[in-house]
Image 1 (tube, chains in turn blue, purple):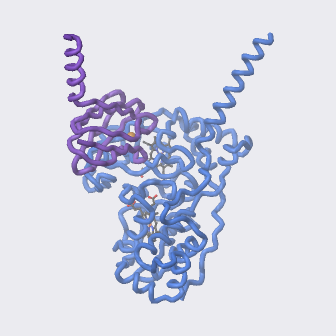
Image 2: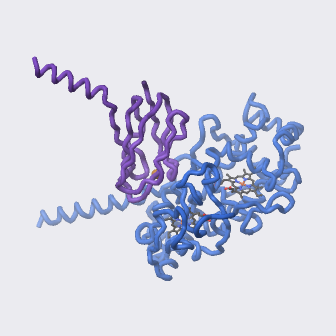
Image 3: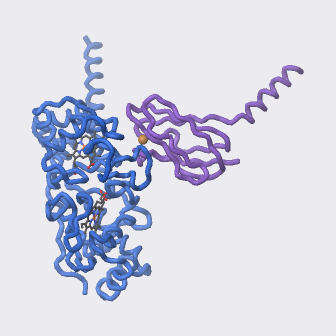
Length: 338
Length: 103
Ligand SMILES: [Cu+2]
């Protein structure tokens, strides 16, 4: 009898232990990752925030970073169009991604062409279809605004106001755009009632039968990796070649970076081409073998028909809703340095 | 006496023979993650994950790309020149090996 209880106890213990370990991988890292040469300080973040919302960074003085990545729209487009709209209504080639949790990614952009946020952040300013503002004009323009010169001197003493410090300041603000505590986080931290039964079923499917976890993993629900999920069929003539543009490596044909699923309810339309409006459709595509099941060049081996029923897709989507937290507390600046 | 000569011959031949070093790819990591090799040595990439990897190096002296490597298929790459460089996975950019090749 005594022996039996001991065995049962051991089984129970190991069960609760694996359970806890299972949950740990979803926990938020204790600190926002940041590079050694640009540690986060309140002054840097505040300066970056002003720049982020300042339309004077664009040649038309109408567009800021927030035009395409707005806090009110889950850090995605202010205008919920499938493709980003920038300078004089020019339509870019890709859907604006959310800039949530970019601090946790070690490649930026859908195709990963920038390594760091510092490297990434100057590109949209100069890009013709985005802010259309050459840095050779922007840097002198900012240097003529006394308020900015002072703030840069406080945030980056003796480094001056130049390309490098502009990128550092914008990147610093970008790193603080982190998802807030969602019902799912409370569940992971032990509040068993934080999400519904249906959502729990969805979470289980997410990790098992549906195989979402193969790519959407850990705190940020992304493996930071590149996959072709079969949104287009055959050869991609005139379509998005994905990371293949960076270098024509066979395994980069049509691949895109796995996006975060945090706050995903706030950022429709979905996918790099904004071709899908609902989470039900997006999840069905990922779960049931891609939009095109056959004849897709370089489709990921993780994308297979998992045979999910409508009911199961519904459970998955209910689970995805638990990844949305309240909006980040943020005072959008209304007064800018003069 | 004969035995000693044989022994010497064998050790010499082992020494001049290029060595093969095994790298496993498991749980989206390379094992080991740092390596010191000699010119002429080879790396045998194994894949213990249930999905594909794609090890590559963009270094000028030792550029290579094993291509899509499916589970349980090995790929062998020879080190051509001395130098220090990184091996990465084209699919999982968090995977990294720091390699040093010496003469
Ligand atoms: Cu890999």
